[in-house]
Length: 247
Image (cartoon, rainbow, N blue to C red; front, side, top):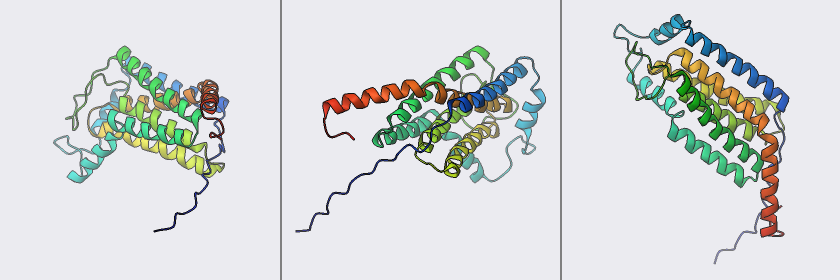
C-alpha cells in the first residue's frame, strides 16, 4: 500500500499593488475624451477619409485582404476572443480563479466592470445607431449597430479588468506593466481585426477601444470601496458559518 504524502499548506497570494484611484480616474477621463471626440467626428461626418482608407488598406483588386487563407483564419480566431462566448468564458474563469485565491474584492470589481461595460456599450450603440460599412465584403458574421464596436469595447473592458485584478498579486512594477500592457495590446488586435474583416469602420474600433479602456479604468476607481465592503461582509459571513476554517 502506497504511503500518503503529508498535506502541504496552501499559501494564498497577498495583494502587492492596487491601482491608484486618482490615476485611474485621470486615465479614464483621457480615454473618454478621446471617445467623445470620435462620437463628434462620426456624427458630423468627419471620419470619411479615415474610414475609407482603413477599410481599403492592404486589399487586392477584388477588395479582399491580401495574404494566405491561413492568415484569414488567424484573424478570425483573434476576433473570436472578443466575441460574446469566448470573452465571457474567459471572464468567468478569471472570476472563479480570483474567488479560489480569496481575492474577493478583485472578483467583485471584475464582475461589476464586465456587466457595467456590456450595459454601457449597448446603450451607446442604441443612441448612435450607425449602420455597418458596405465598402468591402464582410468576412465574418456581424449584426446590430456599428458604433462603437462591441468587440472592441467589451474586449478592452474584459481583458483590462482581468489584467488589473491579477496585477494586484505582484509587488513588482515590471510584471504589472507587462500584464496590463499585454491586455491592452490584445484588445487592440481584436479591435483592428474587425476592420480587417470588413465589419467595422476604423472609427468604430478606435472609439470602442477608448470607451472600453475608459470604462475599465473608471470602474476600477469607483467600484473599489463598495467591492471592499462586500468582500469583507462575505468573509465575515463565511467565518461565522465555518469558524476557525477561513484564514
